[in-house]
Image (cartoon, rainbow, N blue to C red; front, side, top):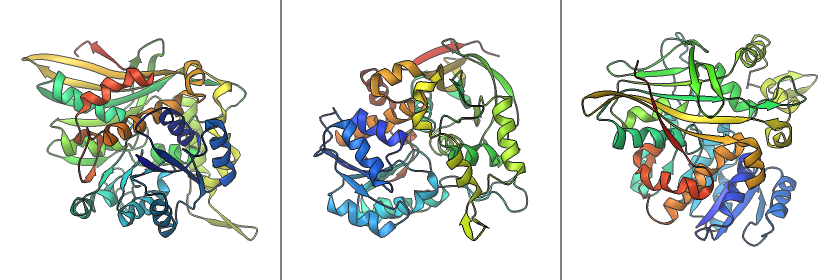
Amino acid sequence: MQVLLIGVGGVGEAIAALAKPRPWLKQMVLADYDLTRAQEVQKKLGAPKKFPVAQIDAGDRAAIVQLARKHNADLIMNAVDPSFNEAIFDAAFDAGTHYMDMAMSLSTPHPKKPFEKTGVKLGDYQFARADAWHKKGILALLGMGVEPGLSDVFAKYAAQELFDTIDEIGVRDGANLVVRGYAFAPTFSIWTTIEECLNPPVIWEKGRGWYTTEPFSEPEVFDFPEGIGPRECVNVEHEEVLLAPRYLDCQRVTFKYGLGDEFISYLKMLHALGLDNKQKIRVKGVEVAPRDVVAACLPNPATLGNKMSGKTCAGTFVTGTKNGKRRAVYLYQVADNKTCLKKIGSQAVVAQTAFNPVIAMELLAEGIWRGTGVHGPEAFDPRPFLKRMRGYGFPYKIQERSVM
């Protein structure tokens, strides 16, 4: 497989490192706006022919098409902030290549009732073009990171193998990660963190469809496994809620994140000061987006590995029935920061995100996952994906929970 990787930040670097020894990968172009960064990653990988570098503006649709054709790309892997999704998604269509991302096209809140009704939903831009992709015979695989991504694979497996009927699919994410030396240091892109945490969260219910609520609503305490323990989780906007109901029969879909009171207070303060704004403002003759300023002031999550300790857990909590009996199951994957640094040189959140698109690439390259159009992970057989996780060093577990 020939892959054009757009974005060589922390996750992009981890994707390249995990893909490097795989026999199905013929070449992966490391394309980034910062050519020096791409060259640094190429040097770490030590295989310049397999990993050529290129400078690219992720918002330049025509330039992406040209680069994809130059390298005969079979797949364009989008590893940049989702603000660039539309340009890269459209470029893949123009180039006639398959496409994969880890977060779908962005939402826009309802103009009058943002905490009741949806406006433009996550992925609407992409799913609206599904017929054109199908007719062209190419596939766009959306939301193939860890959350969304692995969480969706878990949901499909639960529906296919573990339950006869499903009440709720609830993605629950929590961690006990600590970053030494920083009062506030997000372990993932702050741009994306602000977007998903301060937007109105979406919930789906059968018979009602998608609707929104207040940020950080419906707090619940969820007990995470492997020493992480109980964490208060709150509603956050996330792709799984927009993906799972398209494919799976259930009564309700939610996403809740164990952010913690302190983290939430920082996000609320950014919002109160207008520093979450992604629209540019003029400051002393220079136009700049406040959110970009915040991102520039905070440490790069890719550099935090040696300052971090602890574990992060991504998982899907499913309730329903099996053989006429009530059942509750948590399917999850725990990434330990120390182990991830040792295995691939990336911190836990980055590593846990990166291995999922690489496994998906393998399944596409081998023809095990195939299709056309625009789809989420739920459209595919979860079993070969889960089977490969241990071989990639990221095994999953299934935990039976007490039925409430």
